[in-house]
Length: 279
Image 1 (tube, rainbow, N blue to C red):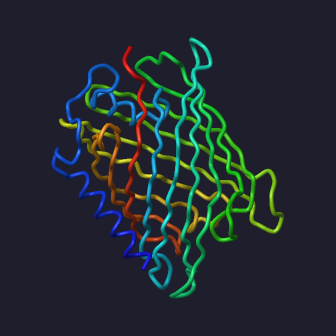
Image 2 (image 1 turned 180 degrees about the vertical axis):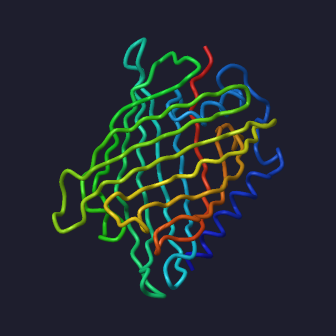
């Protein structure tokens, strides 16, 4: 049932991406900071001065001995605030909603909230060719069951750097967190997240995208330490009525992974964009 629902969400998103312009009203491109070209660049920049509310569905297939399907919906608002003429504070919060199957069984599982992951970037308000941000990343144990979260409060440094020459966006985002408090009966946390992203912008709001998320659990033994996906997909900046959105779908395989980690997955996302109005 979870597998079918995940596939249905993906089919709906792809259908919307390929919808005729009649579905997306107000197709004329406004001038200034609201043009599709500017929105393409801004949505691909994790520290852009752009409020966005992405809702991302991650369907992860063929996990464990019984080929179970995990499904994670991430609600992840991005809110930039100008602290002064020189510095921006960008708050990125990820709150997962998780269906986690029992990997050792062919039925059953748990559904609920996962751990919240806020990150705070300080970034130049007027960046140069190299765009960057640094700050703390946190993991807050908000999970509603023991298998959808780590049960630990963790913190560590995070950094992002990117360039946007021509139609390209190329960059990397990384953080490493360590547990500092929480349930003493749960394993300690020492975990790396590394995401590189490469986007190529096409006409009419379309873009090609590759943004896999690599993770390393330093507490695990060597064969089960790394998850390294590979893949990519496409997306489009468009309008649903008057609302600009960023819609995308990406497919990933996990050639390097812990034994029970799913072998492949699909990421489907719609992000509601709130650009600054032209003066």
